[in-house]
Structures are given as C-alpha cells and as structure tokens.
Amino acid sequence: MRITIVSGNSEGPTELNAFDNALYEAEIGDVNLIKVSSMLEANTKVEKLPKLKAGSMVNCVLSSLTSKNKCDELVACIAVAIGEELGCVVETNGINQNPEDVKNEAIEMVKYMMDKRGVEIKEMIVEEAHHTVDEIGSAIAAVIYLRDDIIEK
Image 1 (cartoon, rainbow, N blue to C red):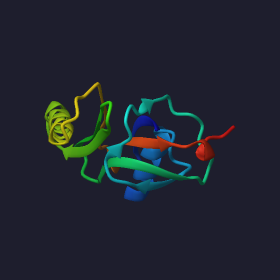
Image 2 (spheres, helix red, strand yellow):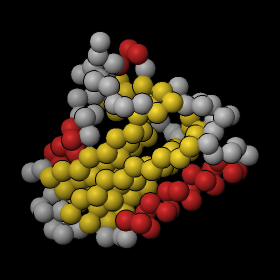
Image 3 (cartoon, rainbow, N blue to C red):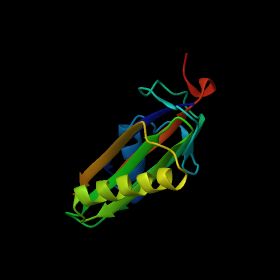
Image 4 (tube, one colour):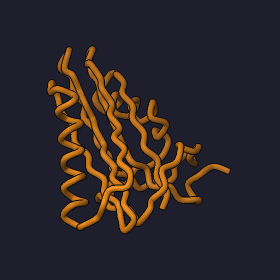
C-alpha cells in the first residue's frame, strides 16, 4: 500500500469555496474524495504526492474544518502510525485550541489504536494545517491512498 499526506488552508467567499480552496492548496482539489476508515496495510509506504488524474475517485482519511467567525484559529490534524503488521490513521481538529494540544490528541489516539492491536509503531507522521480566519476560512489535512489508476502518467 502507498499513501501520501497533504494539508492546506485557505479563505473563500462561502464555506464551500473556502473548503474547496483548501483542498486545491493541498493539491487534491481536482479529485473526488471518498472518506474511508483508518486502517493501513503492513509496511505501508509514504510517498510524495504525484499528479492525480482530474475527476478520479480517491480514497482518503480527511480532517477538515471551516469557520466564518473572524479570527478563529483552525487546526486540522492527521496522525499516521505504521507497523510491520498494519498501520492506523487518526484525524482530529480544533477551533481556538492550542495547536500542540490538537497534535498531541492525534498522537495519543493513534498510539492507542496501535497498542490495542498489539502492533509496534515503526514510523509515525503527523501533518497539520493551521489557519486564522479572515472572513471565511478552512483548514484540511488528509491521507490519500494511492493507486496506479488515479495517477497521471
């Protein structure tokens, strides 16, 4: 299994547009995202984001939040833990919370999931997006599950 981890944040004239702009900033705005649960195969490989085919159906774990409250501090966070037997992904977010607290929550949740399954963590990656709302803002962080048929040649 191959994955990539991305994040983005942006403003827009509507909540939908702010979210779409954050996806576009993360370079996943031209594909259809399908939310899946949080499991990875054994020894999953993390790669750089390749160019994805526009309109592709793409599996993901997505953390997102959008606000129209000026000065809100948005944090979207993804934590990935990879082991030899399997891996786990968690997503969390927070508005006007200490970003370090949001990150630590994600880390603790993914550690718990791996521990519950008796799997030793070989690699852990945490990705965050931060955004201070000007008018309408959005922040996203995502794990994208890569397949050859969604990658532009």
